[in-house]
Amino acid sequence: MAAESEVIACQCHISAAFNAGNLEEAGHLSIRLKYLAKLADEARSKKSRALRLP
Image (cartoon, rainbow, N blue to C red; front, top):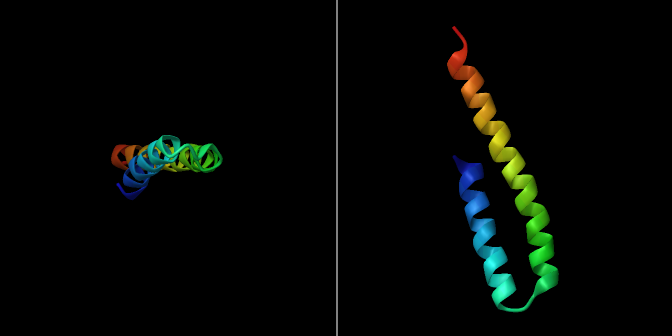
């Protein structure tokens, strides 16, 4: 799923920002990560509901 791969990429970017000492960038990315995680969860829920429909 595209949203899940974006979540993983964002996690990697947060790690890189922390390792570089760029806490401001890491903070911005953590906000984006929360948003992407919400999108991924909504997509999973939609898919699950669609599979349960007759």
